[in-house]
Length: 348
Image (cartoon, rainbow, N blue to C red; front, top):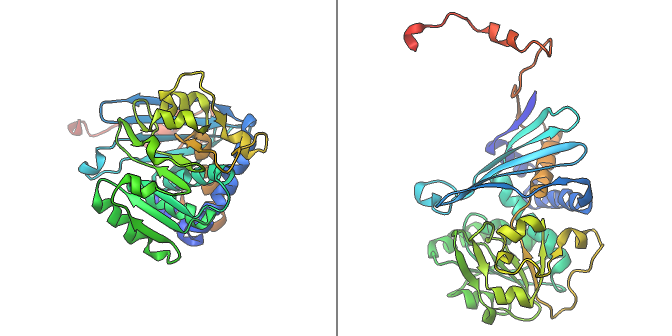
């Protein structure tokens, strides 16, 4: 039987231990997996692009587990009452191919993306960061803010969005964190002025320039999250050229990330090598570092492993017969005999 986790089940797991502990645990799983990067069979995700969005499949495997995520990105969805990003995924046993887990990944992806940002920031930001400017206050904004506050010690978050109601929503949701100062900024430039960390997390599928060279200061760490598919960017190319760029899976980021604006020969650095201690991150306190984050399947592999272990530990979720159980594994047809071969022809 396959363990099934819907949104309510995942919500119950998170409530069981709390947002911060959930992210801390996920960070441990993710750092562990990225440290053993070479153990994985990796590939860029497969994408089906349309005028208004993209639908993607993201597979990855090691010797024990195989996982995939189905995820979309449709910026116009909120006008239809739907989320911009929706996802689900599975974790299977490599030895047999049997699906161990089938899970929602919409809520989980928001946590996963924030934790991936923290994983990179831990090895890239300058010492003792205290302020972060966030441009884009959509569905993932609070997750980024909470992660940087609780896991990295940032105590001031500045917000900007062209939609004032989105900013109001974030401020309301972050009130439960009394030690976090949340400020609404009148412009993107004011939002990031003097910030230690800048997070760009906008949704529009366009070659936008959210961050311009005049907004960037020495020592900043730029957490570029929103530019994640061909034709979708946020960061001015001159900023990219002036900073030290770190990526997840380079073949994928060259196509989907902000570095799609640069030549294929422009140097980038693999964030997993910094996490594993094989390469230095920031070269100086004055250097501009850039995490060109597009999201990679290994991060979803980590969250699926984590969800499975938590669900088993706390006995949350249900089992479903996603694939048939057979007394004789060669006799699949016998399962059809459970149903009458004489149907109601009038129903046809």
